[in-house]
Figure 1 (cartoon, rainbow, N blue to C red):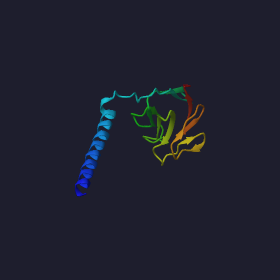
Figure 2 (figure 1 turned 45 degrees about the vertical axis):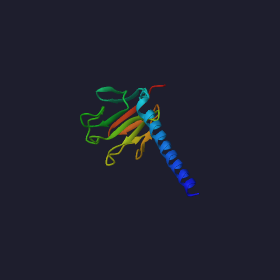
Figure 3 (figure 1 turned 90 degrees about the vertical axis):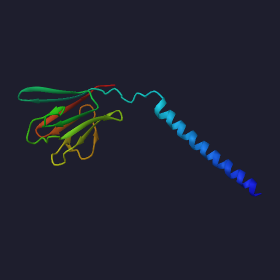
Length: 141
């Protein structure tokens, strides 16, 4: 009887190690051996338009994220003391454009409502930052 139990235990240990090896091998194949899947999706064009005394201005956003602020290096550069250095960020994910307030000390409004959490942008929205009123225009897919 004890020899039978020993044989069963050895068999179960070997089966367990084979199962663990199969799982590791399968994961390795999935991660390293398969060709890279295309994770980059085409980003639809986002255009921000505003008008001031100098005339109309337009910012065309074609990458996955863009900064809005008064400091150099932002994709949407708005020069005014009411605009923070890094005021907001636009990101494209989940097949939608999102607006997020980066500096809670400086108000950011979307359609006259304060932005606290990230919000989805739609065509025709108006982003208010300091004295700027940015009209949102989204490319149709």
